[in-house]
Amino acid sequence: MRLLLPVWFSLFLVGLASGQDDARMKLSWPTTNYAYARGERIENFIQPTVSGLATSGLFGCVRSSGTQFHEALDLMPIERDRRGEPTDEVHVVLDGVVRHVNARAGASSYGRYVVVEHVDAEPAIYTLYAHLASIDPAVVVGSTVERSQVLGIMGRSAGGYTIPKERAHVHFEMGLRLTDNFQSWYDWKKFGSKNTHGAYNGMNLVGFDPLAFYDAFRAQKVDTFADFLRGLEPVAIVRIATTKTPDFVKRYPSLVGATVPAGDLAGWEISFNQHGVPFAWRALRKAAVKDYKRLESRVVWRDSDALRACRCKDLVRKRWGHYRPDSDMQRNLQLLLGLRR
Ligand SMILES: [Zn+2]
Image (cartoon, helix red, strand yellow):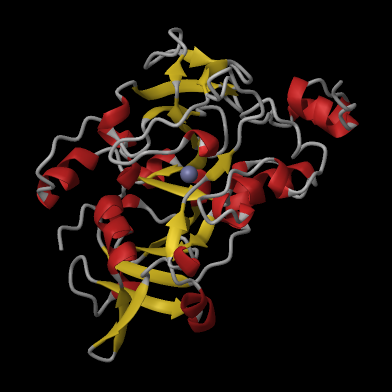
């Protein structure tokens, strides 16, 4: 018999709430394992890698002794069939619109995956559910899905590698899409293979820590994704000289702290957190970038200790006496601003 769920969770899951909570975003958990809701330890819901350490299934610099980034939570199954394959349903956590369905397991390292954009959330984040065994036939691009609706069945599908049966899981991501013009960047990079995922290719998605968000939401420290993102810690602040307004800024206006009239726009100041999320933006006038060349970017502030501690991302490097964006940040800037260098 299932344990009784704490009250906050039944409100949280079913969306029944009263008084001031009526307006609060309704959010649920992507699987039917309620260990997190019951406040249990991560070992009861996180699927570890071969290392056996539950922390290896969390978000962050959690793999290969901290040098490899994992952009999601890996959630374990709790139900299996006779052959030992998981049968757990995977549920969408918020109302949204299906933006991408990859039904061909071999076509992505995510295997079969679904991306949902939460158009009513602030900002309109995406969630991604990967390594599915199967996808529900009702889940097609453009269809609306309601919170807790079944997206598919948990599995271990993956392109290019094999996830063993005992480590089947759903890879659950939350984040932001860098650009709507991903294909032009992809063509420029000449990867030599076709992009079959449109703008929902993993390279165009930048995730934040889902568990940190759920913790903050449950504790009522944040009510929206905007609240959560505003509270992220910057590790580097970059200025770039451009008169262009990136589609990212138009898509996620709640991340923009200061604007200027269109004719006065001369650049942007962007705060990145340790995982490369461009979480806070400020429009700049000419004076702020007066000695910059067009499209030049400079790191104007950095937290050296935090940068050193984050060993799975290359965000800032010193070059010719100046701090500049390093490879991971440069890639994000290429995608965000159309830079081709
Ligand atoms: Zn994963």
